Image 1 (cartoon, helix red, strand yellow):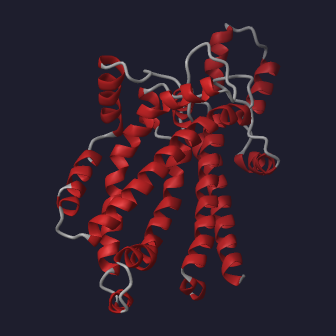
Image 2: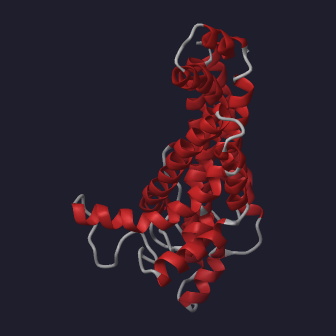
Amino acid sequence: MRFIMRRLGFYLVAFWLSITLNFLLPRLMPGDPVSRMLSRSQGQLDPTQIESLRRLLGVDDRPWWEQYPEYLWRVVTGDLGISISRFPTPVTEVIGSQLPWTLLLGFTSLIVAVVIGNVLGILAAWRRGSFLDSFVPPALVFLGSFPYFWLAMALLFGFGIVLGWAPLSHAYSVGLAPSFSIEFVSDVAAHLVLPALSIVIVSIGGWMLAMRNTMISTNSEDYILMAEAKGLRPSRIMFAYSARNAMLPAVTNVGMSIGFIVGGALLTEVVFAYPGVGYQLLAAVQGLDYPLMQGMFLTITGAVLLANFLIDLIYVRLDPRVRVS
């Protein structure tokens, strides 16, 4: 319990620091989003309305020490302000409409890459010198060296335009109403294939190589030799003894990958016009949408900290030695 409380306190402090940085950084950026809105209104707002709009959007001229407590209270109460680029939609509503698609794309890609990459790494380490160990890791690492957007465009051109096997953009077909019907679910899955595949191809090599190297180190431990001397089946030794202990670094890497999931594969979402958080974040930066940027950064940071806290709890369960560290 002391270990859990100590880690919880650490993450709470980290979250408070992230809130503080999230408050300061947008205000240090150049530009005035309200001036852009006023230029579109063609002078139809009087000074009182302008000041009210600045205060509503959190970009008024008050000192930061007056705005900071108000901002903290709004974060605690779940009020992240009004989006400037999508005025007058609340930030929470904008993020809520984009986050499910990013989670669908990110978690699908992560699960597929982790499972396939770790299984390939386990088999490659167990059969050192084989074709799987000698050829597949460098080939996957070579594919992983390509940028996301380049691979995404290549897949889009090859499978979407030339062959016509997959949709070209969006999360589902235009004109199709969201529902839990087989038609809608299958359409979403078809639109998900190419964006997820581009992320899996780039990331699977790293998962395989990390698991292979950890497995090779684990295979030299004394308890593996003892298991072999007892005459246990090779498959049981490989998965129940060697792979189980080699999975500990992979569990940590999964927690670190949560930030990528919530932040979204920005370039992949842009190439496929996928309506995720990354795509919306780009629009927020281009529109100097301070409240939306703050809300998205805070969402990403909170998700990363929460995921790593849960990973710490899982790590304690898998390796009790961590409790005394």
